[in-house]
Length: 181
Image 1: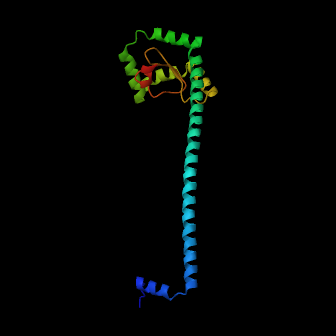
Image 2: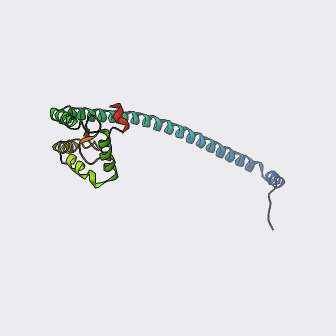
Image 3: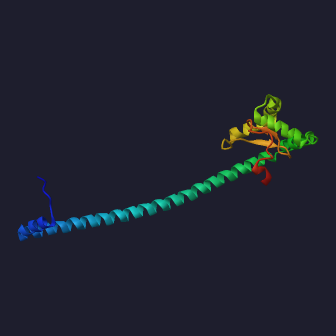
């Protein structure tokens, strides 16, 4: 037989209790409710403070990391600028620009397409660039400054002259950064 508790049963049970037990029960319920309320308040207060404190710490950390990243990028840009303006690099770029002055855009585009397609017809150009002493200098530069992923030099029309490693294409003039440089 199932026992069901109805409000009438609870009322009857309460009515049968002696006054002393009623006071004790009311006292303990009051304490229980107070402790639970206080615990909830403390939990919410601590959680709020932790979230606020964590947010402030993360904001401070992100600012510091951002500043450090900017300093690294600026130092890397200065180092690359020194490399790019060194006399032997400038002389080589100017000589290659003169050498390729009569090369048509269509010829450069054809080499670029062969390069991108992995066509063996581009291997001679790739190997010539990779084995150039200036490419050796770029690789030595990257050993000195390993934060650079790749370093390459292009002529005034955007084709590779020297590179630390094989690039994805021969003609860089089609890249978004090229127009802004």
